[in-house]
Length: 288
Image (cartoon, rainbow, N blue to C red; front, top):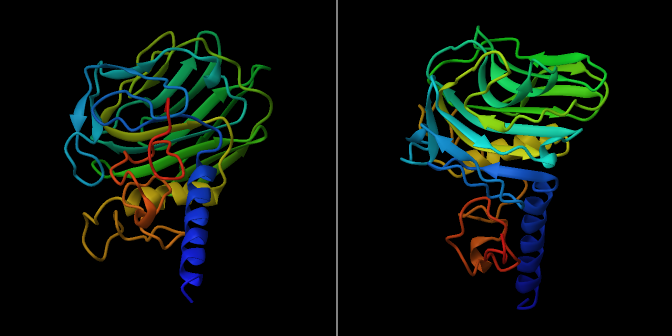
């Protein structure tokens, strides 16, 4: 019996670490927006913050997100070939303060040259994503109902080369057939604002935990990201309303308080920043 416990413990470690590694497959960038534009992804695609200030995140923790004023605040990431993905996923936590026409969540859209893509709120506070294909076609998806102001919501969009899908809090809210590669835009990638060649489209509110992948995540993977994020925070709402903390983290019952894929029982670096790339001991990988 003394041998069984170590074997079972190692199995849990492998299962939990594998789940974390899988969700990071294809990850190009991860901007936690903890009061800055640092990228925790594998390529260190750091953004430059103009105006936006540290704000409360989903848990109410001060400095855990960025708050945009709806005028000229922005996080800009220099143009990279890595953003010229032909399949993609973009995810973010957002809490808009008020409606604003075409307010950009994540933007790389060039209306003048009909290229790039934009993840935004339209004038009726519906979540929407659009892009231009290389053959000049325009494709989009839009949620069926407006979102509430002043409340956190997890938004995600995926494109697998033939289908666009839009998610809110892990649920599919719209899909649309699309075709062909995305026409590359040379504009910088922007968070919380965007200039399409004619106008700027600022976002008013808070944005947190932006992720960019070069593959289309499945719905179950997006649901895992939602639940993983919620498992980090206490429930801030009433017991009868959905909120952070209402859903258990799926797939693994072993506690992982720093969210690095290594259970607390075997974590040699228990204070690792959530989402950081770690080795099998739970310590940050060299160069990451």
